[in-house]
Image 1 (cartoon, rainbow, N blue to C red):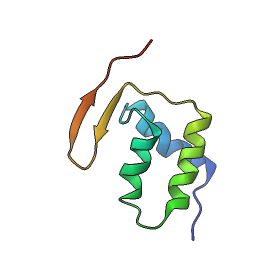
Image 2: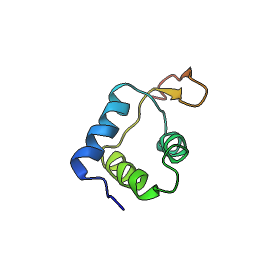
Image 3: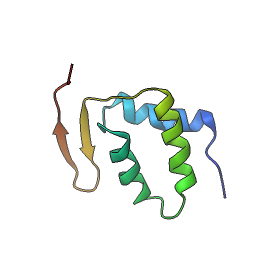
Image 4: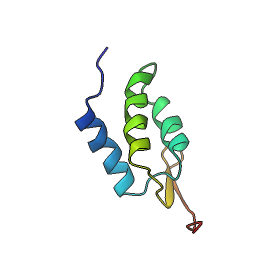
Length: 75
């Protein structure tokens, strides 16, 4: 099984973070586990990098329904 490198995980997560495509890491995990079948190690690697980046994007993209959800900052 291929393991995602730190560099590639950061690039992939960075693209989602920069485009504000999710509000919580759980949204990101759910969307991608549905697409990666049983390769949860791949997703886990990305989540570890994401958590280190302390990510808190402000809007979400539901990939399955292709609809946008906007949320206001809690600050």
